[in-house]
Each structure stands twice: as structure tokens, then as C-alpha cells.
Length: 319
Image (cartoon, rainbow, N blue to C red; front, side):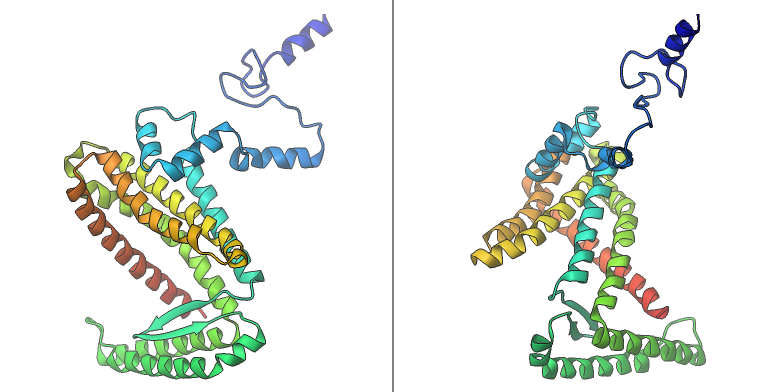
């Protein structure tokens, strides 16, 4: 009697008590693999749903790279189980891309960062001492120009709604923090790059729903829901992350063989891909799609630049 009871209990899902017909419960989806396994087996299971490379992953990556707009149309058509979910794909792509940039900043001898202060370009890098010495004169001149730009910002700062005294106080604070940022770029450029890399992912994530809203406005007559525009935005961002990641990984190979053809092809393919994705998903003519593509590109670059600079300013104010 006890054996029958135990067999019956073993045949039920521990999570929802539904009779089992395989490794996965058809009611709640729980995997029935036990916990009495090696530690690394449990760790592997925790990440396998995110980073496992199976037929679904291969199918998704092929479509993502070579069939612009295809994944978005498949998702809307209800054919979803055969591909990685859009948000999961975005998270994987963005994590891999920014992890690569962070690792490059940490270990690479050449990872430049440029920032502009009132038209004055300043470049800082983690190059080795010999290369650093060769560029000292140019950098010193750039820092002097940056200091002049900071002075101009302070002198010309006149925000509406603030009194002269308030504008002066704000200008003094901005000047002090901007000079801290310039000093940081001189002494520890890697730290400044880390700050930029910390800012970029949340800015891009926040821009996703905003860009989807812009797509909705650009295609008001398309009879599509907002979520459909959001799916396209998510897939296109995922493609850009992975394409830039691939370009970065190919860079040392290109240097060793003395060619930049793969990176050039990728750089050309990215804007073509964006245009073709709009063409496929919305089905409008070539010319009108090109006009919308150019307008959307301009709006997105403006939004990203302004949001990123505001976030950078907020970061500088906390130095």
C-alpha cells in the first residue's frame, strides 16, 4: 500500500499536483528534475534558459541577422514558440554587448573615449605610456580648449525662470563638476568610460517604449497596436547590439590579417537592415519608407543624445 501511495505521489507534479506525463508538467510547465545533483549542474540549469544554444536560438539568430523585420511579423502572427522571446533576446544581446565593452575597457590597452564641451573635443585613452607620451602635446591643447569651453558655459548660462543669483550658483556648480570630469579624464580615463557604460544601458532601455510610440505616430494608419511597434523596436535594438558586438570581436582578427572588410560590411548592413525592417513590417512604398526611415533616425539620434547627455550631466554632478 505504501509503495502504491509513493508511486502515485511521484506521478504528480510537486508544484500543482497535476498527474505527470513526462519531464515537464503540462499544467504549470515545471521541470521535474530533482535537486540531488552536483552544484555546477544546478548553476548550468539556472542559465540554460538564457544562454543555451539550441535550434530555437540558431533559428532566432539567423532570422535576426539576415531577415529584417521577419521576427516581428512572426511574433504578431502568433508563431512565437519557435523563437526566443523578444524581451529575453534584448536582455541577452544588451548584456553581452555591454559586458564586452566593460571587459574591453578593463583589459584593453586602447579604449578611447571622446566627449565634447561646447565644441571642444577631448580624447582620453588607456593607452600604454609610450603612446601616451606621443600624444601629450595634443591632449594638453585639447584640455586647455575644454577649460575655455567650460568658462564659456559658465559665462553664458542663463536659464529662464531663475534669478541672476541662482544662475550664478548653478554655473559655479556646473563649472566645478565639469572640471572634475576633465581631471578624471586626465588621471583615470577608464573610470570615466565605466561611468559612460553605466549610463548607456538604462538610457537605451528607457528609449525603447518612447521609440515605439514614435513608430506608432509615424504609422498611424497602419492599424497596428502599440505593442506591435514595440516588438519591432526590441528586435531592431537586439540586432544592433549583436552586430556591434560581432564587429568588436572581429576587430583583432581584422588587424591580424590587415583588412576591414567584415566591419565595413556590417557598418553598411546596419542602416540597410533598419530600412528593410520598416519596409517589411509596414509594407509601404520604397520612397515613403525611406523618408520615414530618415526622419525616425534623426529623431532617435536626437533623443538618445539629449537623454544621454542629461544622464551624463547627472552623473557628473555626483562626482
